[in-house]
Image (cartoon, rainbow, N blue to C red; front, side):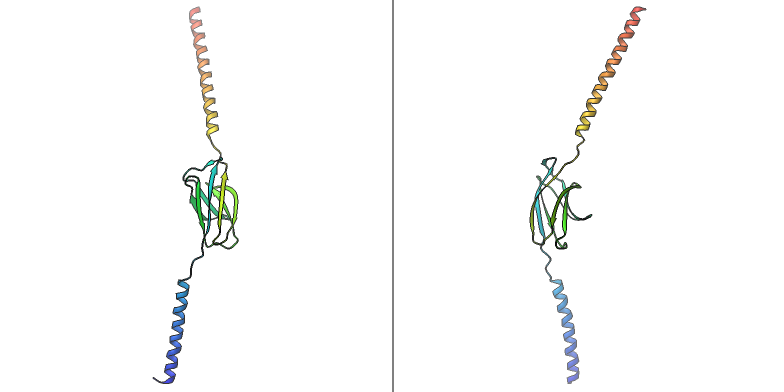
Length: 154
């Protein structure tokens, strides 16, 4: 092998090695460590039921979610722009709680929301129905008494 051929082979070897080493370093890059958010969830000042959904959003984009168990939750936030403001929701209701994202950070939160309940409305509707039924029965009863009175007169 002459000097010129050896030099060309050496340059080709260096180029292939550089491409191979570059792809090895890209593949082995470590992912960013997450920020951990955990805490308690309350709905109408009571511990949230199992299965209550906790959602983390940046703007309108959902970035993570978890399900409460015994009123507690844990979320892992990862690969988010540094110092992004993350807002939390419980069953789609805004908690007005924000956290500034930082990789490897840890925050404990207490998320509270008020949820409208139909129970008072159902109770009022049931009472109205009972009163209405009583009035109808009294009205029918008075009509029956009038009829009996009219029949006795005849």
